Image 1 (cartoon, rainbow, N blue to C red):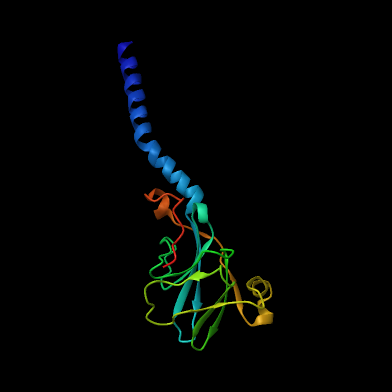
Image 2 (tube, helix red, strand yellow):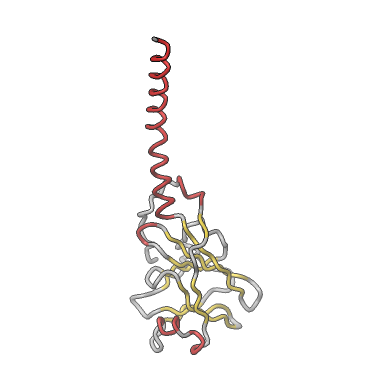
Length: 177
């Protein structure tokens, strides 16, 4: 009778120790998985044959943020030093036109804006053009009338690497340079 009680007590102790060690990791992982690890990406081929990537992230408090970058890594957070970041518009769409000289990105006039990177792009630097008439939303709804592309980026991928990252999903928005 003593031996089964000892085994049961040992099992309970192992369970409790495991619970206290693994529960915080599991809670963080579940929270990040539910809140913040979705992304989508679409490439835009430019006139010279090179590509830029439009990445939509959904990370907690400021979900649905669009960035334009050279790399296609959706698991990487948009970096103000290297990426164009749209922090003010609807966050799931981009209105643009590919021209012979590069990429023309339309945005609403200030205070809405797309933040330009603080670092330099070696080539194919996009041009940000604030719209007045027609409004950005009008271009988004009727792109064929304005000879632009209205790109809606779906959240169709998940970044499992971010499940146990140390930053929480309530990180601050990118600051203007």
